Image 1 (cartoon, one colour):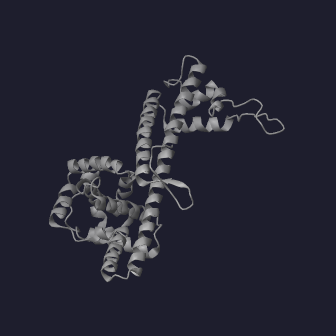
Image 2: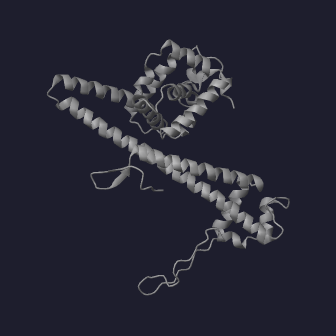
Image 3: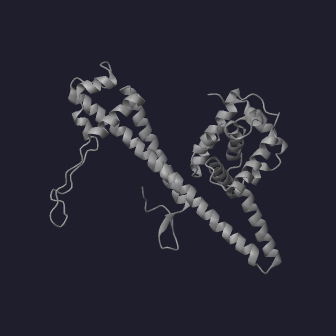
Length: 327
C-alpha cells in the first residue's frame, strides 16, 4: 500500500521511509479496508454457515490439488504466451461432490442446485476469506513498521540528548539537556507510571474498576483515540489480565488495573492535542510490548517491571470486585 501524498523522510542512505504521521494515515486506511473485508467475510460465512474446521478442510484441499501455471519461454527467457491470469483457487475446480458433502453435509446452504454452483460458492467464499487475510497481514506489517519508526526516532533523540548533556560548555544549557535526558529515560522505562497517584486518580480508578458502564465507555473512547493517534488497539489485548499473567499472586485480585490505568491516560490526557501525553502513551505501548516479548535487556526488564509494581502497590487493598471485567 503506497500513497504519493503520504509524508516521507529521506535517510542518510538516500532511501525513503514514512514518517509517523504518514504511517498513521496508512494504518487508518488499512484499518478501514480491513473492517470492510471482515464484514464481507462475516456475512458470507454466516450465509453459508461455514465453520473454521470446514474452511480449513477446503483450504487444505485446494493447496493439495493446486495447479501451477506452465510458462513457455523462448531462448531469451521471454514468456511466449504473454501474461495469463492465474487462479490461486483452481484446486477447487475439481473437488468431487462427495468431498464437499463430507465437509459440509447435505443440508448445508453452500450446496447449490448443481455441483458447478456449489464450486462457485466455495471459491467466492474462500476468495473473500483470503482478501480479509491479506488485509490483516498488511495492517500488521504497518503496525510493525510504526513501532520500528518510533524506536528509530527514540534512538535518534537519545543520542542527541546524550551529546548535548556531555558536550555543552554552557552549564545552564547542559543542566537543561541533562534534565531532558532524565525525563526521556524516565518515559522510556515507564517511570511516570510509578509516580505517586493524586487523590482524584485513585478515586477514579477505584470507582471505574467495578463499574461496567465506565469500563465500556473507557474502552470505546480509547479505541477511537488510539486510532486517531496511529496506535494499534492490540495494546488493549496485551494488557488484558496483565497482573494474572505477569505479576506475582498478590496482584491477581486487581487484574486489569494496569489496563484501566492505560485507558484513563488515553481518555483523560487528550493525546491528540498534548504532545507530552502522546509521547508517554507511545512510550507505554512500546515498553509493555517489549516487556511481554522479553526484548528488553535483563536490567531494563527489571526496571520497567519494578515501575509497574510501584503503581500496583499504591492500590493494593483498595480495589473491589473484578466481576465488571467479565464479558
